[in-house]
Image 1 (cartoon, rainbow, N blue to C red):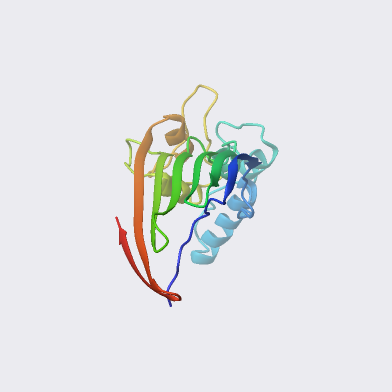
Image 2 (spheres, rainbow, N blue to C red):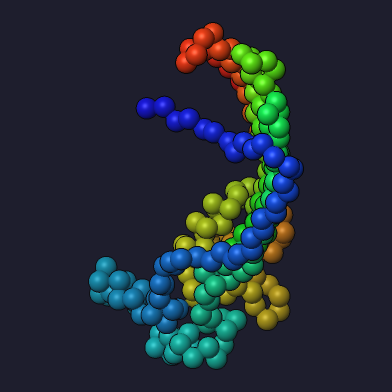
Length: 238
C-alpha cells in the first residue's frame, strides 16, 4: 500500500495564533524482580553443591547472614543495581506555537515546536526543535501553487565510558549481569567492580555521547485545471 502524509493547512480568515504545551514524567513500566544478595548466595551454594557435592560452599552461613542483615555493607552488601540505574528525572516538556490564516488567494500555516525530554537514567536526554510551513497560492482561476517545508533538529545525549567505549546499551547489559553482592561504592570511596566493570561508576564519570541530527523535507506542487474535474498536477520534493 501507499502511505500519504498530509499536514495541517491554513483556513480563510483572520490570522489565528494558538499555543499548546504539555508536561509529563516517564518511568519504567516493568522491571525484572531480582533476588537479594543473601538469596543469590544461597542459590549459588546450592548450584555449586549440585555440580560437585564435595566442593566447599562459596558462602558460609555467617557470611550469608551478614548479607541479609546489612551489618557489613562494604564487604557484604545488598546492592539494588536497578534502583541505582534509574535515577533520571524522566521529565519531559513540549511547546508548540501555530499561526494560520489566509484569503481566497493565499492560505498559510506555520508552526514552531520544542521538546525537552530527560531520560530515566542519567545523563540521557533529547531536545528537538521543529519548524513546519504550509503555503497555498491561487495564482489564477486555473493555476494553483503549493509549498510544504519541514525542518527538524534533534540533540541526543547518552552516557558512555572510556573503560569499554560502549554506550547506554553496555550500561543496561552490565546492570542486568552484575551481582547484588558487589558493592556500588565502599565507605572509603572505592567502587566495587567485577571484570567487566561497574555500570553506575561509568555513569558517575559523566562522559557522554552527543549526537546532533537534522532533517529537512520540502515539497512543491503545481496544479492546472484543464476543464472542470480534469487537472494535471506536478510534485517536486527534496
